Image (cartoon, rainbow, N blue to C red):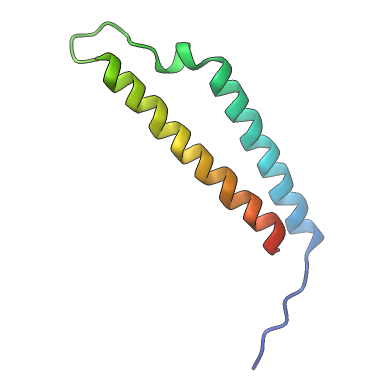
Length: 75
């Protein structure tokens, strides 16, 4: 049996709102990156670990934005 794909405007709206929230969070994190990801001066904290923390969050955020954008066009 072949499944019929129906385009749902409610899901497109939901994923559009989610994309706007993700983009807003990305802009907020970029503007306040020094507050969130800067070197704290603790003995166990280095500049490399602070940079790694920032890039891990950026990588996850990019993936979330890409997947949400794909879902807008797939639904």
